[in-house]
Length: 407
Ligand code: ATP
Ligand code: MG
Image 1: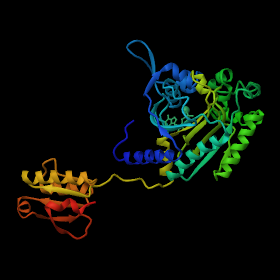
Image 2 (image 1 turned 90 degrees about the horizontal axis):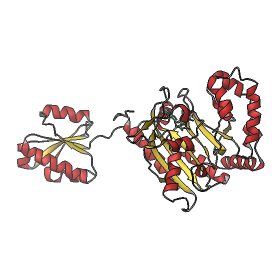
Image 3 (image 1 turned 120 degrees about the horizontal axis):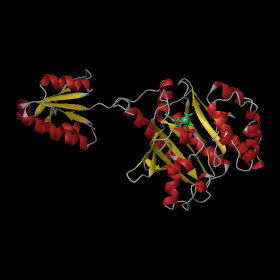
């Protein structure tokens, strides 16, 4: 995906905001490789998911080993913690990442084959207050970005104790509608029936409307956890809706699942998806550490920011542009912009060898606030005219103290 220079200030703004908010919750950054052995994602994302079955970019290296461009971040983070012996660090461990992900899907608005995520993971906290904290972090980032039209959906999908019974009830219900389900859902019914609940086809989602709900089949532990989470969210002033159709149909996903849905950005409206995955660490060969996290799609955040009318930060403009005439003046210009840059001031001078007229046109185009034309005469008297390009007053300045004028 190309992100052109007009757009990068917005990306940087989002990245900076996400980092700053995450830091207030005590999260540290982790970076992992762009591709990993295919096996990691098959186990860590799940063999029966669309991501693994249909969406992975998988290739063989020169030694015929199978690798996959990461379709998401969680599996890699869990692997990295196990491999680097970090599972006995002080808990909870709180990590975030900014990564590109790759999925072979049908490109459309809000869905591309290479996309970017800001994701977080928290390990070693199982209490419902940790779920509330993770959701609050996501809500804070979304709020800090100025996205207004957004709704938090939450659900609980139970645990390995209560899910088998629920699964039975679900299979029984959908089996009455086998003929109407789409081909994928007929398959899902056998391999992973919970996934039928989030099928996007209108017929399947129509049938799913009346399906048994996970929250009606929770064991006492899961029920209490969900009730506490709701109380904590209310105590933190975070509004939510219960959405019984959010699922993560894998055994190691447990209890809380959530999504933030933005308005006005079309069909791909989930800007953030997350959940608890208490079984994942042990599934990947580590200790039985509980985990909970989320991931936000940066392009969808951008769409939502635009829909909310957020002012997009502009590319910065130079404080001053020095226009030299001749080689002696060029030497002055180069040394002076160096001094200014050392002070932290954005300054430019001609490095193309343009005519004076072309230089002034260029200075105007890049939005320089001031220009300073320096020729042999100016060098001789040591003074030149600092021109205010925004229409303010021009002033005579001493060449050797130009940098003093800018902060
Ligand atoms: P979707 O409903 O869009 O298929 P998902 O359940 O596959 O989402 P997750 O794996 O939960 O998505 O990824 C977290 C977030 O990453 C999503 O909520 C979304 O904002 C973003 N995302 C996922 N896939 C894409 C994509 N192909 N292009 C852009 N953003 C994406
Ligand atoms: Mg998807």
